[in-house]
Length: 209
Image (cartoon, rainbow, N blue to C red; front, side, top):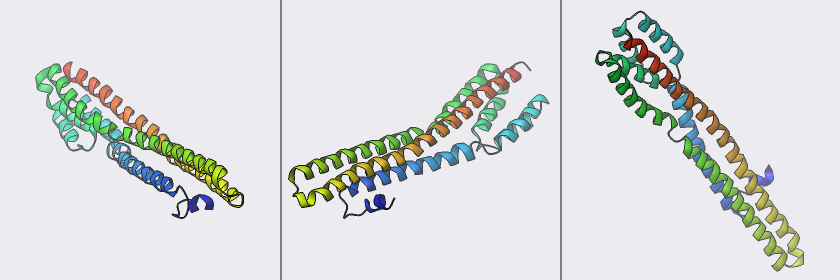
């Protein structure tokens, strides 16, 4: 670990790769934190209670109260969908479906936004680690070919340290980001599927009323 920390020093060859990889990781982490807050907090907190209360109102045919409840929970994407459906009930199934689709096309991209950027940051980290590895190998071969025998051992050690250090940091940066991308994708897809499923059920219920 101490050897890796030394690799960030300007006195160490290849330190630029270490700082660039770290910067890319921080950018990816920033996107990740923003998505976690939006998907797993803002778009999910209180969702189960809202759906339970909304379902009871729909079952009791208290549509005005259901619309009021949905309109007061506009932070939840599912609530926006429900508000659009109930608000257009008078227009029939087609009107409800059109309003549902309009809100869905707005809210679904908001759930998936920036997740691809986190994947890009992970890929860039891996590639930068590979570039550092290649740079370290070039440094090592140059040492073998051009350094005096007395300096060759240290130059070889430095070259290998560059190659291994940048590879390790690239992987340490990329792997957590990719794991978080998987978690975010899973949660965003669940919310999107829920909007589709619950929206269709409410439309069918209201259309048959």
